[in-house]
Length: 330
Image (cartoon, rainbow, N blue to C red):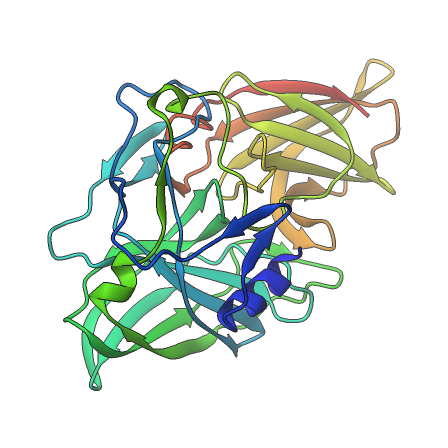
C-alpha cells in the first residue's frame, strides 16, 4: 500500500492494513505502558517494549503539499546534536504525541519539511500551544514532524501547520512546495485517546535485533548496498551518470534525512569525483546525490561527515549516530 493511499484510507475511517497486519481499535485503556523503554538498549536498531496505535485526525492540502495529522500517547523521543542523542520525556501536561506527515501533493512523495515549520493548536479560537515541531523518524511511520503537546480538556480543536520550503532540492516530477498553511478541525476526548491500542511485547523480545513492522512502504530502490557499524544502510545507484546514495534504516528501509554525506568516486585508479552529496527529492524519493558522471564499475566511497540530526522514536535512538565510511562498487 502506498503512503498516500494509507493516509487517505485511514483518514476516512477505513481499517489500516500493511501487508498482513491489521491495526484494530480497542475501546478500553491500554494494558501496557506507552512510555515504557528498554533499559540499557543496544547500540543498533532494536525492537522496543511495545507498539502504539494512533488516532487519525484529518488531512489538508496547502502550498503544494498534502498534510496528514494524527496522534498517539505522549512518549519519549530523542533529539540529536552532533553524535549525541538526548532523551525528551513527556510532561504531566502533555496529552498526546502529535504527528504530521507531509507529502508532495502531485506525486505522494514524502517530503522532509523542517526549517520554518510551525505547529499551532487552537480551541475556541484561542491558541493552546504553538511551537516548532521536530523532524523525527519512527519504525512505523518513517520521517515526519512531531512533538508531545498539551490540550485543554475534551472539546473541538484546530491543528494548524505553517509550512516552510523543503529541506532538500527538488527535481523531476517532484516540484516541491512554496509553503502555506494546512489545518484540520477535530474533536478530542481523553476516552478516545485512551482507547488507542498499545500492545506490549513479551519481555524476552525487548531490545531484539529487529524493528516494528511499518505502516507505510519504505524506499523501493535497487543498487549496491552496504551496512555500516552504526546500522546505517547505504544503497548507491548509477542513474545515467547521476550518483544517488540512499541512506536508509535497516529492515523497513525508511529514508533518513538531515545528514551530511561526501562521496569519492574512483575509476581505473583515478579520482573522478570528490564532493558533497546534496539532499534531494525527485522520482527516486529522498536521497543524497550529485551529477558525478559515474559509470558501472566505478568504486564509490561514501563518508558520513555529520550524522543525521533527525530526532528519533524508541528503537532508533542508539543507531545512525556514527561517522562511518562505506565502499561500494557500482
